[in-house]
Each structure stands twice: as C-alpha cells, then as structure tokens.
Amino acid sequence: MEQLSPQLMNRLVFAVIMHGLNEAQTNLALNVLNDALEHDSTQIRELAVVALADLSVPPSRRVPPLAKALGDESPRVRRRAARALGDQGAAAVTALPQLIRGLGDTDPSVRRDCAGAIGRLGGAGHPAAPHLLAMLTEPEYRTRAVASVAFKRIGRAGLPHLLNGVHASDPELRGRCATLLGLIAPDDSRVVDTLRVVLTDDDAEVRARADEALHMTRTPPPMAAVA
Image (tube, rainbow, N blue to C red):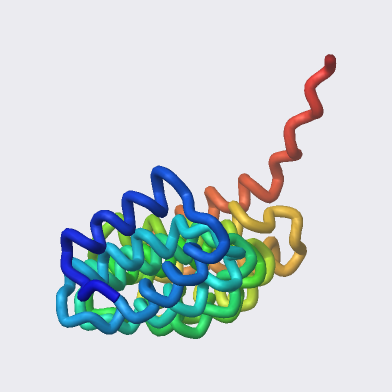
C-alpha cells in the first residue's frame, strides 16, 4: 500500500465524502483510517476523523475509532472527534465514558464539543450530569451555555443533580440550577418544593432566579393550535 501522506489522505477523504466507495473499498478505507489515527502527522489524524465521520458504514462501526480519537494528543483532533460522535445518533452511547472524560479536557473547546455530543444522546447521556454540573460554573459563557443545553436535552434524567445543585456553596451554580429546574420540569412537585426553599436563599440573584423559575411552574403550557 502507498505510504500515507497528507496528499494521499486528502484524496481518500475526497473520495469518501464526494464519490462514495463500494463495499470492498469501504472496508479497506475503514482499516486505512483506523491506522491513520496512529500516524505521526496531526494533519493526517485530523483528516482521518473527517473521513470516518462520513464513511458509508453503520454508525456502530464509526464510533469505536472516533472514540479512540478523543484520546489524541492534539486538541484539534479531539475536538473533531467529539463533534463527529455527536453526529452518530444513539450509537454514540457506547462512547459515553470517553465523552465524559472529555468534559475534563484541558482545552475548553474540547469540553464544549463533548458536552454538545452528550446532549445529543438525550436521556441516555444522564451519567454525565454531575460532570456537566461542574461546567455550569466555568468562567466562559459559551461553555456554560453548551452545558445548559446538554442538561435540557438530557431532560428529567438529570433532575437529581440539579436538585442537589441548588444547595451548592457557589451562588452562581445555585442560581443556574434553579433556572434549569424551571425550564426542564416545571410540572414536577419536587422542583416546585425545592424552588420555594430557594426563595429564602442568602443571595439576591439566586432568589430572583428561583422566583423566575417558579413563574414557569405556574404558567400552563400553551393550548394546541386550532387547525
């Protein structure tokens, strides 16, 4: 086999994305791309992730190599792998342990993309909830926003961690948890009872967030549109 170079990898990526491959070529490409994830060149490893994400094989065959790429030494490769895993649907649940580890990555972009991928798993991503909770205190707004969206997509499966979060020592975390509780489960009696307690919080901003969230619990859902 011709030795891999960035030029050759570009040709392979182009063939995968633009032209498609027959079954024999696809299986060969999968093996080549798996090997390419170990290449010395960061560019080749990144291109391998790009091609794997679009290779015409079942998602269950794409997920293992993409999960492996989450451990790459390059943040760019890890970031691309996280995004690609988010596109794999329910099959990506097998990569949940690697995605959870990615929530503690040294690179904030990798943390955000891992959180985004976890959110796309819906309720199946609930084991990541305690780690997402920690991300709600990150200084960068984008990171907090992505973690909040992930919580909303996980839904009620993440409630126990949010209910605990309103008792945290950090007032910003308490307030953000109160807001999410009102958004995710305004009809849950545990949420209502907890928010009433939070109304007595020492921090004025937390009390304001709890009050706003309680308004969500009192507002009935919109009526179905009449045809």
